[in-house]
Image: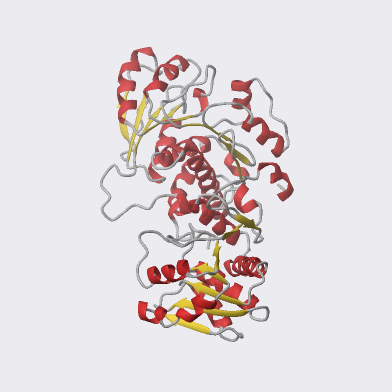
Length: 469
């Protein structure tokens, strides 16, 4: 897949802070290191300051990467304007910020550390004579009430007659005459500057997406990871169990398998369905189980004769993943968010449309379908869309064409849908399933089976490199 193929699927408008952190991490994984992005951001910030034609500039820097952006800007301003830098000196700087401070110490820029309110009051003349103040105190990673000495710094800047230029986002409580947003706007009214992030960092899934997965807190209780119900089996015995194991390995705390077929998997709770297929006589029992579950995964190994049951159960599902034999017309719709996981043949079955061979054409077809839900269109390159956004997943291995890998994927979707919105859950599930398959292939070569993938899910989803660095 070439970068120009994703051009028609670029998102616009305000981006959430969490999503921007994911994009940054994806860019790093693609080879654009954080110092490169910081250099581009700082240069853009300096050029915006120079547009005002200032004689005196005061750059206010915090301890994080936002402060590093300000220090880069000050370095680029050293010959063009009288520039001073006031920086928070309480230790624990980010490594990038410390790097930029070390470089700035060799420039023609006076540095004024502050660690308390009195330090700032002694720097009052710098605020009084500045034509432009650069706000690089707190960036996208900040939260909570601003404490001293930053509260005093903000008050002094607000009282100044200078124009205030914010780096990426304004510090809480700080006025801003101009907000220089890097890559995408994080708040309305920003002026956006390109900092060289590859388009694939946002249009394609990557390790940065894993930063969106909530971490389990130290006081988490049983069930905090969600309860998933898998309904399937009968004609195909192993499918619901592969989905259930995928859900467990992806973080669901409780997984029930409602099926006519029992397999001795002690980690899964078996809900017996009498007979040899899922039928109308099971609807009442299944509806009760669906109502208690956070997410229902429905269709794995179900066969062609149980779609009326699927239709009857869908309204009882708070959230659902419809896979395999549940992907028939009329298409089921859950109460809340829904993920559909068709391959090309199932897509044609529910739409009557044969997918084009090219990836952009497939993406346009999926996006324009008009289904109320998120589609995870499986293929050599997976396509995920909610009808507006489109994302591409390129992870995976040719050996994953073996039966059962889609069932594992459906289970991962179900687990992630317990704690994430449907679109994000589907994107991350596709990425993780593919990465797990790659890990198996790297270890074993050929002969991959779906249960091998299950064992690799935790490392792919929760391993040390989940942030892409």
